Length: 173
Length: 178
Image (tube, rainbow over all chains, first blue to last red; front, side, top):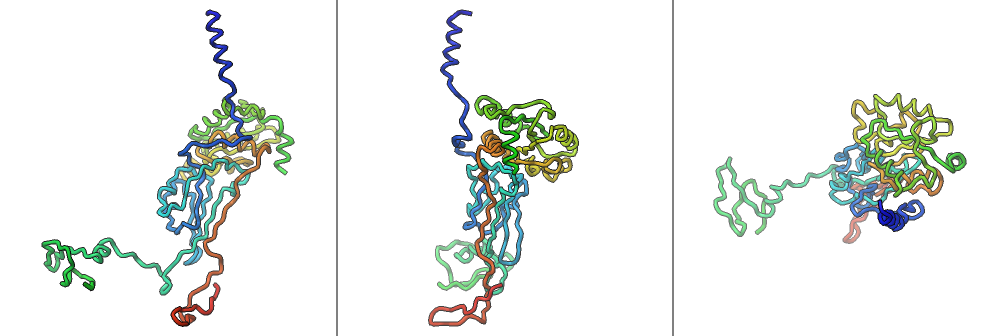
């Protein structure tokens, strides 16, 4: 124990300064990848309810009031901010914000509710089915073997033949 | 009223008792992090005490579980009368992601009345300090329920018989509201 080591310690202690954050008085930035409260964008949401079916804590509820109106409710009480809803959203309508100051005396304050307009076919009122991948390819000219009728596509062609292929639709050439 | 009462009763110092009723210790670590010199909460007079009989505030972490519900209730009843309960973390606020399992009863408000909720999994130390500051009255709370509507009710209903051709356009004559 020399005097020098004591002096060294004193210098270290003096140089440290103040480490306590003046937090509630001044704002404190969060790290770049921090996930806070999810924010739902009603303008982008299409109401597919993928977030509701992917939520591990089942905190996003989807209720259909009628055929046109779907209510998507985020309660947020047991939300763990895992970000799976934001990952699965096809329209990127959910963003994980940097908001962490959500302390409240009423748990209902964290709630978010979207009233979504579900657009349906105006003629029959039912939803229509998208053509399958094969049907979409056939529209673009893809031809494939028909095993049942013993018609084979032996060679690919750079142009469409007028001859009809397997249950083909009429294509104007 | 609660706020003024809090300011009056707990203005100088909050002695907190730290009750974990079956959480994963993530929130415990954040609460202990709050007590370190970096986020020094003793400048607000907050002090961790070992017994609920000395405490003003109970910090609840973890959901109310079948095995620990009774003990949590006893700890709450052992606290002297002006008392606050903080639910820290998403388990204590709403039951956590295992809310529907056998041994979890649900949020701690099923067992003890909760005054302040600090959601997060786990909440940042700043979020806990913010919750305490909201409770003491240093800052105002920032959250409010949000509601968006893509379409205002009532919505017009389509009737093909009400379509009239005018020039090139098709005009929808009467918009019947549902």
